[in-house]
Image (cartoon, rainbow, N blue to C red):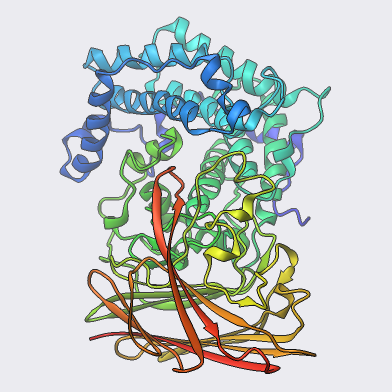
Amino acid sequence: MRMIYEWKQDVLEEWLKGQPAAASSLYTYSGNRLNWRGMTESPSYAEIIGEISREGNRLLGCPIPALSQEIYDLFETNGNRLVYEGLYFERRSRLTSFALLHCLYPDVSEYRQSLMETIEAILEEMTWCLPAHMRGQSVDRHIDLFASETGFALAEILTITESSLPLALREAITAQIERRLFIPYLDDQYPPYHWETADHNWAAVCAGSIGSAALLLELDSDRKAAVIQRAVGTMNHYLSGFGEDGACAEGPGYWNYGFGYYVYFADLLKRATGGKADMLNSEHVRNIARFQQKAYLVQNRPANFSDAAPHVSVNIGLSDYLASHIEGVTIAPISIRAGFTDDHCSRFAHALRNLVWYRPDAPRQADWAGGSWYLADAQWLISRVSHTAGSFGFAAKGGHNNEPHNHIDVGHYILIADDDPAFAADLGSGEYTAQYFGEVRYNYDCTGAQGHSLPIVKGQLQTAGAESAAFVTCVEQGETEDRFELELAACYPGSGLSSYERQFIWRKTGLPELDVTDTFRFSLEGGAITEVIVSKCVPNVLAEGQIMLKGIRHSVLLSYEPGTLDVSIAERLYSNHSGQEESYYRISLISKDEASLDHTFKLNFKFQE
């Protein structure tokens, strides 16, 4: 693994010596203390503060949820995560809401009192970890995403509330962060945590949160330097999960999460060391920072491969900070700003910065500008088209079938426009259960090949594994069209294919259209091919060779050569990430010729006037 950032502990200790006590000035662009009153009096913040106030006032009328052992044990007994997590995150919503409202409205006693009661309840929790992450780990030793986030949140609340909370409560907070984060993290009698060498969001969130909490609270410079050096080492592992193209294979939601915590830690570390330790100054990190603006197809609808959601709002604080500090980062449209309650986990680090890092004066466009990007390491082609008739987006991927939060989806594609249901859809993440991350993962339509726009070859779906991979044979991007070609035979081992070429041509002149051409070559004997298109639009067969996909605003005519394929359409149900049932349509185009060694099928998707 290439180490991008590496500083010796004694060097870090020297840089951190004499650091003043953490204060709210750490969270401003100017270096002045946060002007909470100014925010409440400014029309520019009225919408954001209104969202916080509505949630806080709702919670004032609700008791603090009880976290019983019986509910905690549900995950182990039946695999259910949602019941316990719903109550757990309601507590975090109380923490986030009342902390911000107390700072914004310090004279409102109800907010202060509710904040204190919520903190006391959280300090008494058996563990800050989720049951799904414990799996036999010791409650006195284990640190997961949410334990580290909770400690970081409490450290930041201590910082921004300054001396407004009672001394005994402030001391209790510090003691619990010490007990639950710093002591187990630095205890050499145990092996390192699994996330310390992970190359995904766990590394950034856990190490970034612990490191940030140490920067805010730890007074001993030697101990603080030990935490920071270890956290920086983990951040290098996190960065190793990105190619030079900066793409997050888990999608922009996980980019928001993992890279967000990376940036929050990097910002606090840079300030604490007077700029000497700057973890945003490599081209690799700058490319990661530019991923967000490339990942979206239309408004808040990204190329949602893997366990990404079909709609992902922008954390405006993180986005505006990156645009202010890194050249080439686009300022995001305000229309897709994440609302205060959009994050069902109610993460304080995001919510605080969505308020204090927001730049109301930044020049913004109504939507992302058009353009095409090829992310070579991820093997994603993403293209946006702006037209007088609306906004259109196309994305296709190569890659392999052993990616982070993997789906069986090599060669899969997405076609969307404005607020229409996806014409060619990616279902995104399903409900997270024990089974979803277990041996039956690919039985779910969200994750398995059966829920993606991929052909079935002689009855065989694509297979899992890193060897089930694409070979990119052509990428051409132009003003009028983009071309993307893949060799995919390796994804169908044992099918008898000597070659399977999938070609995408995305025509961008006028109302766009997409050609998908599949060429199959068998080595010894032919077999049946079924072309599959996954759509969220109701398919209407107009005539042989023509299917209309009708959206809310636009329609797409799907055409193929008549007489060569039989049509079968099935409406299927699946459970989305929130555990809610949704439906989609699987269009199967079944080849009539099974004997030929060579088959070519051309699908044309044309937006209609």
